[in-house]
Image (cartoon, rainbow, N blue to C red; front, side):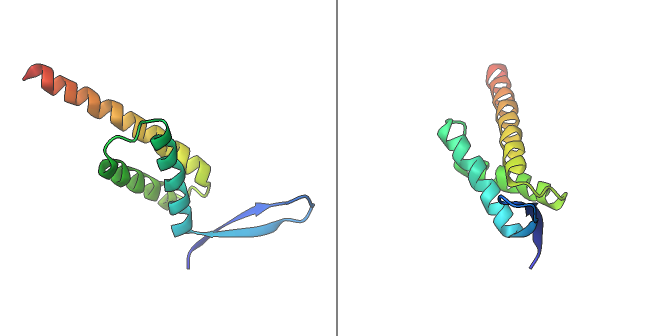
Length: 97
């Protein structure tokens, strides 16, 4: 099983490794991003959001990003930009028709 290792020191000077599987990293990052977008009303079409977030998060993990918070924050920002760009394209199509 592939795993990320990160170090933490819970109240001591000794560092203890914590392991998280790549699938758990993807799942937790996705969940954080999904819940944020859902709570803020920015989710939009659920199928589109699901595909976009999954693909974006998987790409970040493949590039070696080990932090679920950084991954989820970047995925949220990317999805927000995606929504703005698709809304702009949609409005241009409607106004030219």
